[in-house]
Amino acid sequence: MSDRALVVVRAGALTTVQDRGRPGYAHLGVPRSGALDPPAAALVNRLAGNAPDAAVLETTLNGCALRPRSTVTVAVGGAFCPVAVGGRPAAWGAPVVVPAGELLEVGAAVAGVRAYVAVSGGITPEPVLGSRSTDLLSGLGPPPLTDGAVLPLGAPAGPPARVDAAPQPRPPAELVLRVTPGPRADWFTGRAVRELTTRAYRVSSASNRIGLRTEGPALERARTGELPSEGMVLGAVQVPPDGRPVVFLADHPTTGGYPVIAVVRAADLPAAAQAVPGTAVRFVAVRRR
Image (cartoon, rainbow, N blue to C red; front, side, top):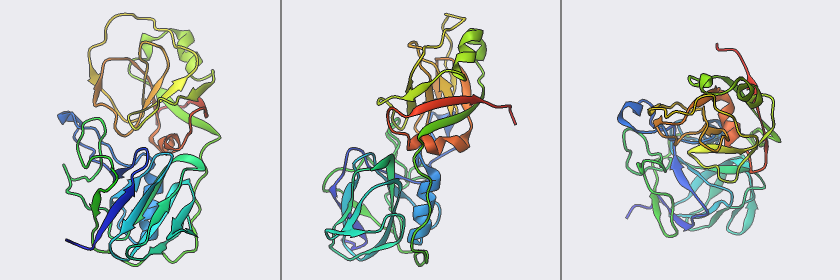
């Protein structure tokens, strides 16, 4: 049994293995998956001395607890949360050494939703279609963590970053999402199209890795017929029958039958990963580039 491994002591509400995902397989019905906050995942990898594409852990709201079988360097970032090693406070947003057998505790998010945990050598379950990411929609990749699970680790690729701490953006007080018109904007009334970018919405507690759901004014459709299923992209703003926009995130389906009124710019999506329920959402119309 290898000592390059982590034992999951507390899995938390939802902790998954994530890397850059598996883009390019939509024609096979495979979502892209991957970390919802790619900049945060890349930063903790850099702090831990890993390659940018190494797999990390993505926690949701209440963190996790892990025990390494050998001494490792870890870095925790993304949502701000308390970190402890062996019961003693440790740094967030900086490399931390965790001795073999000590307990690493990643606490509940104080600000934001998803924390990222990088471990020197990276998390190394068997890749599927070139990625180690957990995909909640298709079931590809390793299952979400459970108490007692053992996660294999790779060999360290390099030394940890020589920094005391790395700045990271705070979770948004208001989530601003820049949008361009979607392929089915004409399925909505002119008033609905204007309301999307002028009315206030909020993040719904029903949001997940598949999509950010919103609460706010229902968007009125100009066409009431059925739309045949068609391809969906990351950031698509789909409008289901209740009229409330849903922004598709990393585990989104590759096809869908509800009309897409707009598409969010990819650069704005990492902030969506950290927007807590109740956060104000504003859609801002921009020109196509």
